[in-house]
Image (cartoon, rainbow, N blue to C red; front, top):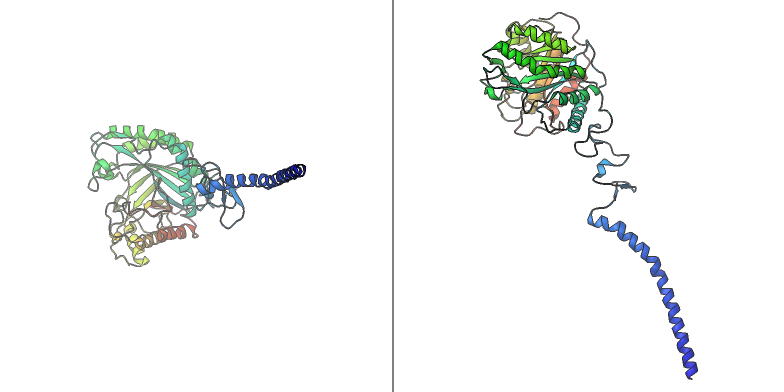
Length: 432
């Protein structure tokens, strides 16, 4: 019996051993699957997962570093036509050239343009400037523009000062070259437009149009020294126009303009122009010896906010007829715009008042001005304005200038209609 018992015990032990071996086989098979599920699944739970699923697709997308789903995938398209959607991180310029205008400007064509107002910061990198310039170039191309004017401030110490200098918001010539290059690559006709800042002049009573420097020759010497590097930058980047002065009413007629313009033309081979304020333009001869004249056109029209287009057109023509009737093919509207607010027709150049928003007033004004440009066969128009550092697809904030139009759909529609319609151009008729 002991032998049989021992044999029975041995048989049971062998059976349990075999069962143990069989029980370990499925565990060994399950273990890799479990580990794999933990490795892949746990990051999805805690949020740091290397795979994401594209909405509407069963195909996973590999995500590396700090990219987001919008940055990856061959079927992801940028919302703004490629201006900056391909940038890998903030400040890095997007790959490839910016969108280009369909019909680049050529002599005899109208200049359909926008004024870009640029207050620079010295800490901005070339990469940031290029990214922002591409964003603005894409926006202008979307408006059907073929031209852009880059306005930026320079500074004085007061109404009687003879000192002029670049300040904290004046772009360096190197920064200017970066921006001009991007705009040029987009096929846009470029204008460089330094403008005397008015902060220390205490506007609206004091402004750039009534400065009275104590020594005018010293003022012009300082002005020539200031403009020199910017003329060189404009020449290197093939700008079409350099604006030698803007709205300097009280300085018009000074003999020193002749020497300043001659010095500018030695450094810059494009057009040298002067932009007159609207009141001086209609009031008489602008005594600055340039071949090209721009007008900052803020003609007041005393009509109600719901006035039809033809009343606004008649109001503009009444002003322009004071200078001369008929076509004005040598005149470009260097600035045209109006605040998007109630009562703006009475004072379209009011940069300081902020009444109730009224985008319809702005849009209707733009439509009327475009009609005047075409009927009077003008050389073109530049709408005021877009801020260089802004996102042009976002409506202006409440505290920003009412004259800004970027992000106001009604006005943008009128700009596209104006720029996109057939217009033969200014022709060769004479003009005052």
